[in-house]
Length: 86
Image (cartoon, rainbow, N blue to C red; front, side):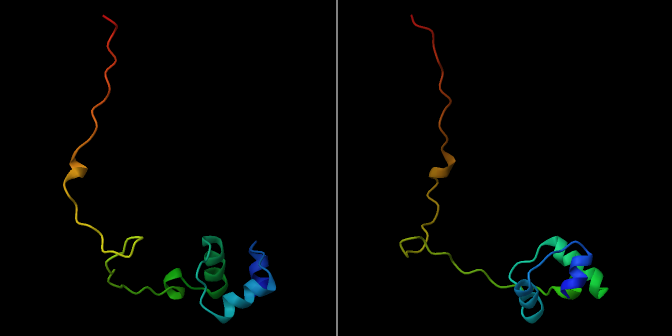
């Protein structure tokens, strides 16, 4: 896989190629994805699967549940007006 990637301008170390081939990468650049699709004669949807998950309620830094909005976010500061000295 390394030489095929190098032919397409992708220079990965042996360990990077091993991780790419032997497991599921956490991140992948578009250039590498494009080269893999060219090598394997496939599309990105053939290589990537997605699953939808329900997002849980995020906790705050203190571990408490987030507080509901109070309405204070409606208030905005008024622009300052500079008046000439009288």
